[in-house]
Image 1 (cartoon, rainbow, N blue to C red):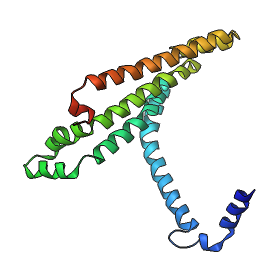
Image 2 (image 1 turned 90 degrees about the horizontal axis):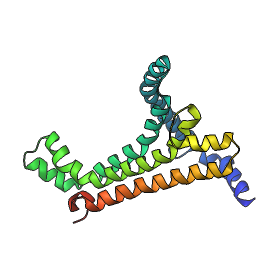
Image 3 (image 1 turned 180 degrees about the horizontal axis):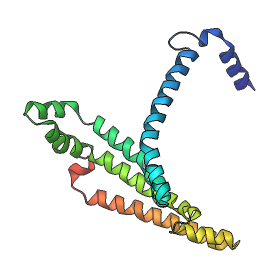
Length: 189
């Protein structure tokens, strides 16, 4: 109960509602961020959804693709931002163009993080693709949904085990590929 009363006291303190760190200012920032991101998301997603809806195909694929985007985007961005800026400046000083720096310096140095995002996305997709069966898609999710329809707990569990094993295999493939890759691609010296 102390936490609730503490939160209430914080919220009812007028000092927390004004200024650059106040609730109203933070709320305005949050609103702007939300609106900007919503508009950009609508510009990207709605045309695709309208066309696919008109054609009557692909919503599961689109949903799964969108599900894979966050780990890919996040890891690639972080990998690129973590590239040593001194190395980039040296490449620029050697006369490299932006394209040469991107593909000859930054991407190779960011490759371990980029591939980590690909690995995470792949494993998440293996697990999440099972819900495609709910929308009439195929895959191992069909075993699970059929088990639910038949009230067969063993079949549901068997399907879940198959999905888990498949996810572990995908993880292992990425791990083996990382170990077999050149040292520079693993981010080790």
